[in-house]
Length: 135
Image: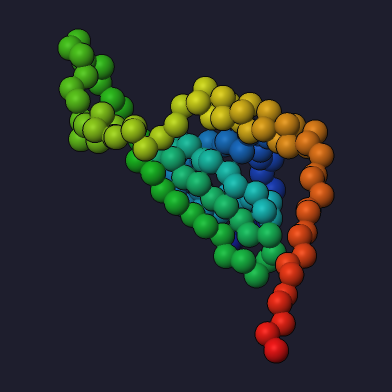
């Protein structure tokens, strides 16, 4: 193997879904990714996921992000309401329209447009005003 190029001769099976496994963060940083492609890399030695996104050209710097995996423990009780749930419940829906209402308005508008299209324009009747000359 050439020093500094440990991954050059390895056969990486890049899945079409953009997911691969690596041994550590250093391997993830040096993992070969094609230009314009984003890969998700799972660290086999720790609870980490990395994303590496290459730019479209060689001048673009790659974007590398590290995430920690956290396992959520299931609880026997019902989940407690969170702050986000409270915000969702307090949304005032009176400012919004339902799809059925919008469809009904669209049908009324289409009927009015059809009625207007069938109407014949009336000719304007212009009356000539008599002008009296004061002499």
